[in-house]
Image (cartoon, rainbow, N blue to C red; front, top):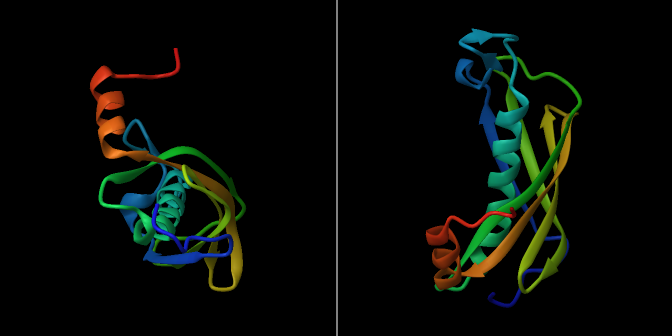
Length: 133
């Protein structure tokens, strides 16, 4: 990894809740609010944006863990802001605490973890279809 990534580094992602982001199961929309999985997507994106400027050309980040406590709703049309702040940084791992806001109200908190691999190693892992069996 390039030097410079440190605890406290931040990134922010803003989005507007759309109908496609509503929780739906078997084709049935349950609520007209932002789904937990949509918020998780933006938490991972914000965390990735913390990492990206620090990756070497031969490296890639891979999401390895995420948590999300969904605390409140964001209806269709609402603006949501997600911040990611680095809380642990090493040569091979980045941990970010994430918070999603609707206005000033906190609607979700969570953690993302990304592991950093040389692209050649990652390619070998992906080609063998490796998991943790």
